[in-house]
Image 1 (cartoon, rainbow, N blue to C red):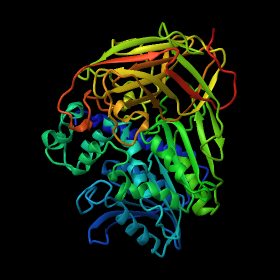
Image 2: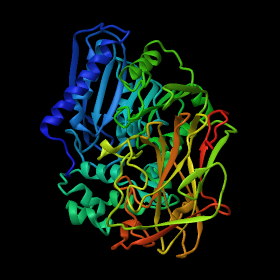
Image 3: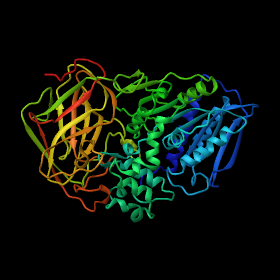
Image 4: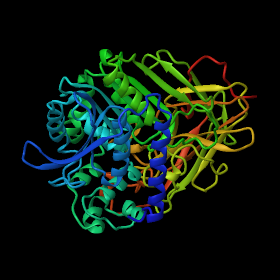
Length: 572
């Protein structure tokens, strides 16, 4: 891949991570009890005979000790696992981590996802059978959380809890938005985790057509699992609803132990994780915690325009205290949902995620590129979308490889490109506290058989600086959140609704609202060819003339779900 760290950058990152762990545990309210830590490596046999490298660390102490379990496919993070394990062991825990087959010295072929349920079950059963193993907790973030979810419904009695962050069990939600594939997460991840070195240029790989052949043509080897991702645009496809992915969606409803689910407003698994929490049983929710903060996939605060004292974005001690409460003190937690409100520097806590009977605040697209309290005179605006010159992602929810563009960032001025159309409001007379999915309704038309529309919603501060709150995308083929591809007749006017991922954000009094409408957001999403059919099979692109209709008789508007009644309205 073209996007990779230098040796110096890698060393600096390792130093930063180790210092972060050390600093957090230096503040731990539970002191160091044991200095002598035993380390052992074994090759643990799986049910099919494959041997997986398993590392055990535990204090030199007689009798049973609580155990933390991790399964990973990332050997480059070994220094993090060992440093974390040492801190746990010094405070009376054992810490066992295992490398997935085909990674980190484990035998077998590396095929993402497929073997984690069977291998994870084999490992957890073995650990729970150890005479010195007391209460057990499962720990994982991102792919490491996936390995936990895949055994969450088949846990031995000794496993008392799971702490799973930055992952969701609804895979299609993480892969697509209305037919648009999330390149910067899944294409980038595939290139880094293909099981062999991929040296092709990342952005060239994303733009390769037909994309379904990029593995053989640019990466040097056929990856059937990646081909299934890029051709599975329909949410209703059997691929996402049977087998591994179908099972994964059902597992949360069968979980019995308390689960900690951690997320960030700017983590690329957020949408899927929210659906995962919703799928938990009521009984499980009563003793589980769901927390969403103002950070990205790496727990970095991702709201450039906001200062705060209560971000609480370091997860190191939070995880340790969770495990100590359940495994050592054996206290069952009180279930809660805790969400950080950007712009208010506060946390909103409640018993369940969804809030009944929320009020909405709506503004309408108007003439003069305005956003107004009510529909005004009918109007039309148009622009040309050229797939060969896509709008770069800058301020986003679903980035990984180009993570520096992730989060809420300072935005260019209105209409900063010919293919970006901006609408702005007057200053707000009252603040608005938004919680939930912002939705943008548009009446649109195009001369293409299919195309995409992208909307970015922003808060423009009193000083004129604009920061993105949320972005969203849809395609005419999957308009309305359709689970199957629809047809579109060129030059006809159709309503579309771009529903964005949830957010909690306080828009300040005297700020203005702004939306930018365009047709691309690359590499967060694939670039639409403007041809109908599966995006990954398109062999060429063409330009499209896009039209947006607004005013009386049209639906074009922006809808904000409000946390509370606050009398919000646009200034006169």
